[in-house]
Length: 458
Image (cartoon, rainbow, N blue to C red; front, side, top):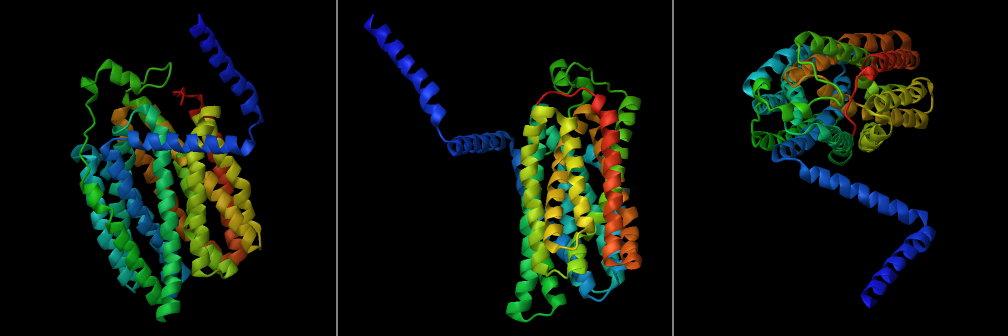
């Protein structure tokens, strides 16, 4: 009897603490507790990934730091060599076109020979092309080396998402793709900042001229990229399980809720075409703006290399935060609506960047547009990997990236032409405005077509 009384007393004390003491706790303490729980949740998620996923993510960190240096500095390197703006357009166009042409053949080779060798082999050859691009000073070799970079990076790009999908369960993919994208953007923060600081630091402390300073920052970027090769060669090939021998339970895991996943080629191909059309619209819009953001700040505001590197790296940092918030928004409104919300919310900030004459407002507009627009990328990847049958995922990923790259390739000469003809203000303003219109159209189309599909709950 005494034991029962003591148990009831303890229970009453716990209820009292819950109802009274915790009610008067301060909001910051709740926020700290929530933040710690969120961090622990992400930590557990990362630790739960298998060996292949962890090595792939580690390799991506080094690869994206190296690419981050090139993203910021290579356009500026070409400009410092005294070449016209049209050369930058040719480089971007040829790189994107080479990638677009290579993606679908690379997808078939990836399906046949395994993801590991496509990823590791493509990255290894890309390292050599980056060093070549850093050393050459003539227009012809610059374009040829950039073209080869596009070809061999296609093998890395087309195999990455299917590789992660094969090494994860459907319930893990939104978080996995979000973490991957966050790591990519954080790594590009480091690379972008590193590139600008290295170039300015070498000029200031070692009295190098601008071309030599930028060239050495590119060499260092290529070296960091090369550090990603050992983890890639440590990957284990995981061939997709043939559809005909998979168990019923395994097939059910790949199916959207309350819907049989149709494995017929015709229906999957139609679905892939819908994804590809959206990717083409976004690619055209991005091709008008994204490759020239560093030149936009340099030309319109005469910003320094260090400032450009800082702003671009902050954009990547904000993207990483937005990407990690993405899964929480998915839980509240669903995958498709979350993707559309991110994309539409980015448009006012894109227009702010287009028309402002203030460097601070332009930087703010860029940062928020960058974060919101890119936050939907892992969600879109998860939707595509869920709706498309497993044996067509390689085709879906390669086609989507192909049309996106074609958008970039086709818009590169137009974007540089607008700036040459219309000047630094109206040239960029028109390009950014067209991009905003294309984002609106792609969002409406995606919602009308993909929004009708049934997806698993997260």
